[in-house]
Image (cartoon, rainbow, N blue to C red; front, side, top):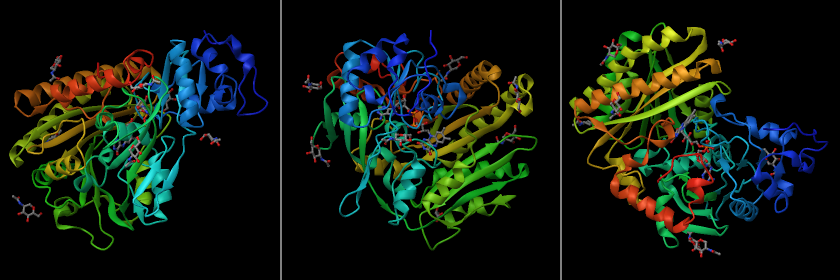
Length: 494
Ligand SMILES: Cc1cc2nc3c(=O)[nH]c(=O)nc-3n(C[C@H](O)[C@H](O)[C@H](O)COP(=O)(O)OP(=O)(O)OC[C@H]3O[C@@H](n4cnc5c(N)ncnc54)[C@H](O)[C@@H]3O)c2cc1C
Ligand SMILES: *[C@@H]1O[C@H](CO)[C@@H](O)[C@H](O)[C@H]1NC(C)=O
Ligand SMILES: *[C@@H]1O[C@H](CO)[C@@H](O)[C@H](O)[C@H]1NC(C)=O
Ligand SMILES: *[C@@H]1O[C@H](CO)[C@@H](O)[C@H](O)[C@H]1NC(C)=O
Ligand SMILES: *[C@@H]1O[C@H](CO)[C@@H](O)[C@H](O)[C@H]1NC(C)=O
Ligand SMILES: *[C@@H]1O[C@H](CO)[C@@H](O)[C@H](O)[C@H]1NC(C)=O
Ligand SMILES: *[C@@H]1O[C@H](CO)[C@@H](O)[C@H](O)[C@H]1NC(C)=O
Ligand SMILES: *[C@@H]1O[C@H](CO)[C@@H](O)[C@H](O)[C@H]1NC(C)=O
């Protein structure tokens, strides 16, 4: 049980008066890292425990540990392990799964003050702390006409995305965002701070590219920059009558991603009348309406924001499309194929199954309480996968001879009363979709972690070989299974 504690006169001070906290971990941290420990009643506790993307993530930790450095984090982690105390780790708080990045009673470790942000001498590499959101990073780099591959929406957090893989605007040129990371600074379970890169702890270096929080806590990412003065980008939205043409365009693009400067995020948005909207991106400060995107831009739009802008401006624009502080769930799934016909069939099955299931949701939740429903498709083809492989590969296990269409279902609603209804509906709908795509021979077990819901599993979809390799690396770097047992949140390799 949580006990109300005395309000703090000064934010930033530990409240030793809150010794009544029931958490073993909070007590264990009082000695070693007192100046970075915050209890209920303090403004820091209030701020950090609300600093999550979806209301479904809000919980009641016993205290918040906000380390100022990797060495302080290491000290705190050692104390937690010695006390066998439970904890959670939160970066940008965008994994919308309850308990993945938060905890009741235990210690919530937040990355907010690990804020390295520094270009190397020739500006080819950015050292980046896990306390950032992508919008901050792009803003900083735009001064230098640079960017990095990262989240497409500004508010999303840096660490969770890079540890999941990172679907980004430049994917067809540089692969998953994690493949541009050339070095990680990591606090291991035993409190040692190590670097993982191509030549040092190279197995850990590979595992962190898709293996998430199973190996250590990352306190710095060194990531390669990309020249980016301006890009041509925007959201192109068309009306219901064009939905079938739009779905065909997705298949046509996916079957032949012939121009690696492009990136698209096509989505259907059901409502009184369904809209189809594609985020379109082209890496050029001079060429607009590239040929390969004409299959989308030739469809008459009801609204379009395409034009030249910086990545920082575009990520801020897209960030406006989502509402923070309500309830959200994302669900992931994948179909794969090699031809237009296969990919179109995969899209069509997903579309039809999803729309067939929708009335069941509308029957249970008033439309005023549904903020957004969305179904989107992320094409990932040969250029993307080869670019990842050329940079050392990752744990995700995608095969460059296939084209993957990773779909995501998004439901955002108002009122926790509906949490269980939505959870059941997305689970039923996802199984219905996957059973149908499996029957057609188009199903793939890959679930992109960034889009996955709590009921889904991730690592089996990476393939048995990669999963086994990840388990071996976790056993080597965390033999006591600290990240499997004392940190209950997140996707576990074993
Ligand atoms: C609106 C929205 C837009 C999105 N857009 C994209 C996109 O464009 N591309 C894409 O690839 N994904 C996207 N995602 C998914 C996104 O990658 C994940 O939600 C990711 O987890 C976000 O990172 P975070 O730091 O905010 O997550 P958090 O919720 O803070 O953390 C996610 C997981 O990583 C662990 N973790 C956090 N920090 C560390 C650390 N330093 N060391 C070890 N483990 C850590 C946490 O414990 C947790 O289990 C989007 C999500 C949302 C909600
Ligand atoms: C720590 O992070 C908080 C929240 O972002 C910020 O307000 C505060 O200034 C930071 N403190 C330090 C010392 O960096
Ligand atoms: C790799 O790690 C070692 C230390 O373990 C470090 O000396 C070296 O600079 C790192 N390489 C990169 C590219 O950061
Ligand atoms: C692929 O796209 C390019 C450019 O959009 C086009 O020239 C080419 O004919 C297409 N190839 C196939 C097989 O559709
Ligand atoms: C997508 O679903 C809608 C709604 O059920 C339907 O009208 C449309 O024909 C479907 N299109 C395809 C290509 O499956
Ligand atoms: C439904 O949404 C409204 C705001 O649109 C909110 O005031 C109300 O509390 C919600 N209903 C429930 C049951 O949470
Ligand atoms: C098919 O549906 C069942 C439940 O109805 C589910 O258990 C199973 O996992 C589904 N298959 C896939 C591939 O999701
Ligand atoms: C910490 O763990 C790593 C990885 O298992 C190991 O190499 C290192 O020797 C350990 N350090 C100490 C001080 O035990």
